[in-house]
Image 1 (tube, one colour):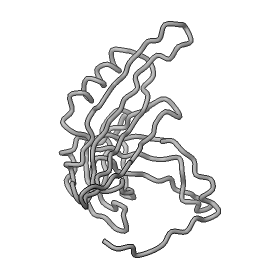
Image 2 (image 1 turned 90 degrees about the vertical axis):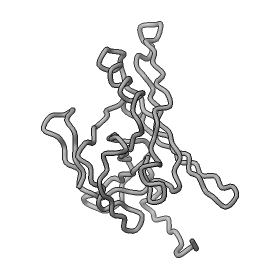
Image 3 (image 1 turned 45 degrees about the vertical axis):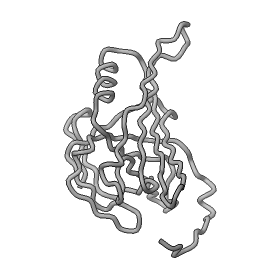
Image 4 (image 1 turned 180 degrees about the vertical axis):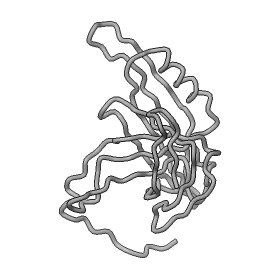
Length: 188
């Protein structure tokens, strides 16, 4: 692949808010069709996507590429903190730990600078156009602690990671919420 265009940094790019606003997770086998246009999934069909809330300002993903012998591998890692140790949290951690591969949709706080209705960016982790669903994320760790003192942190830091052949692609497909907060979303 050859370079086909340059990159311009606009004035509004100086406001490049970090962190994640929302995370949705799904099993790697729940995707039934995809369409990509200009590095963005315009269609990413799934009916079993679940929103995962996390403590504000704790969600992030990292994508680190390395190249050897002519092949590029992108190590992808998604990290977020679920507050408060409870039986419900531990049940969720057990489901994540025993999953057979996950795909994540991550919404960042950064936006496209369009006024008056700026749109935030969504990215797909755990799926790409080369490895497809084999780029899935695995549960790597769930470090849980109650803390020792009254004001110590109480919760679990979850880390999901995997290898991809491409940096995460964007998502512009329509996401529709389930009828209750914890029900499955769908993506068209």
